[in-house]
Structures are given as structure tokens and as C-alpha cells.
Image 1 (cartoon, one colour):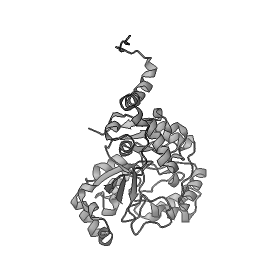
Image 2: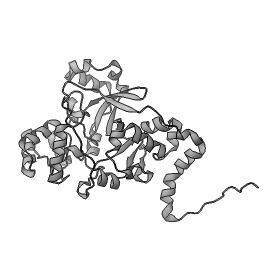
Image 3: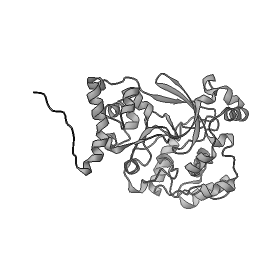
Image 4: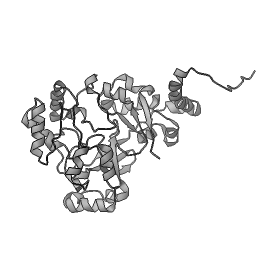
Length: 338
């Protein structure tokens, strides 16, 4: 006797959200069956071009402007040229400040600079030691580390110090004094941080995005004029404006940059702030590498296969996160803006 197809399904109101987040994974399993159990053996990765000003010690990480060597903080707009070769992408970073952007007076920027009060002094000292040694500590659970990433541009955990405020002055020495007044860290530490940070690091992201032009031949020409020797070392493929975009985020696992308005996935703010202290994003390109392009478009959230892939191919990054991050209920889809 044939079973009668389900014509309607009634669920409790409080269960609707969980059901909605699971439906895409159920669809994938029923549509592709055993195919979804196969694990892709290659990983999607970004490889960053290293400029002459890159710190050899690796302090603070290798997400740096190719031309100035300044750190690129997650959430702060930056330009990047990318050329994909198989599952690998060569990425060249350029901070807007490296080419004189935004082209406005300091007085206009002052009202849009944020003040920081990110971590306790205890955590700041540990973070500074990690930064200076090139290591980032394990994740920690602290209510004090909660930072909203939507409006401000918080420092990464390995750069956070207590009550960092940018003084409304034009001199870099004032920033050092500001650090010294509100923290117990040494002058050498504050000088080190000052050297690492881009001068636009504390400008409101939305405001800065409105001021920055889209990549163009004119922007590449400005790079060539200001940094002729470094520009000549770039691969020819990256010297086309079609290879460049304006980005604001990074994939936590692959390191791939994520453009403004580009579809991606992120751990919900309450979870990422409390358990890790930073945004945790996953590029849609990684989802495509795991599930295939067509299947990735069906999925609304990372599935179990994706989590297995992340743990296997990005073991170092995955080890920084608690098990709760590898559950679908911890994630949300960030759709492209229309």
C-alpha cells in the first residue's frame, strides 16, 4: 500500500526558526543522498602577497597592506586584488590611506572616529604579548569582551588594549600619549601598536565606505605613482582593475576577503562576541568548494559536511573555537544587498 504524501505540516511557533534553519540540509540529503558524504580533499585558501614593509617577525599577522605594511583590521574597508588559481587565490592588499584616501580633511573625519573600551587591562597585557610574539591566544569566554561589530570597528583580540581612545590631534605622538594615560602598558608597546595601525582604523565603517571610490584604473595608477618599485613586482594579472574590489571582512577559516554586499555566513553576534570576541565569518566560496556551486546555492547555512570539512582542512583555526560554533543554530546567512 502506497503512503499518502504529506499535504500539510503543523509545528509549534517556537520551533519554526529551528525547522527553517534545518530544511536546507534535509533537502540536500534527500536530493543528493550518499554524494554528500564524500569529503573534498583540497582546501580553498587565500595566499597573501608580501611587500617589502612586511614584518619578518610575523607580529600581528600577515593581513597587511602590500605597500605600507600596516595591519588590516577586520571590519575596516580595504582594497584587494585577487587572482584565483584552482582552489588557491593570490591576494594583494592595499589600504585606502596608502593612496591618499579618503580625500577629505582631518577635521571632517574627527566626528566619525570611534573611541575604544574593548578589554580589561589583564586581557590587554596578554594580547600584547601574543601580538609581539606573532601568536594569537586561545579563545576565551568573557562578558567583558563583547563588542558590537556592526557600528564600530573593534580591534582584533590580539590587538585589544584597555580604553584605547584616539585623541583629536594631528600628531602621532598624541596617540602614544593617549595609550599611555589609560593603560599600564609600556611606551615601547604603545609605539609598537602605533606603528602597526593604519591611520583610518577608528573611522566609522559606513561613513568611510561612502567616501571610498570603487576600484578603477585611476586607483591602480596611483599605486604605481606612489610605489613604482613595489608595483612593478606585482603579477601582471593583478594589475587589472577587474581583479580589484573593496572589501570589509575576512573568512575566518580560509582567509579569503569578503566584499561589501557579498553573500557569506557568520556566527551570530551573541555567540561570536561571548565565545571568541571577534566576528567569525565563512566565505560562500568555501561553501562552494565543499558542496559544489549548485548545492551551495541551495544551502542557507553551513551543513554538517561543511563543519567536517572546516575541522579537517582548517584545523588550526577550528581549534580556536568551541564546539558550539560548529552547530547550524549558531550561524546566520548574510545576503547580498539589493
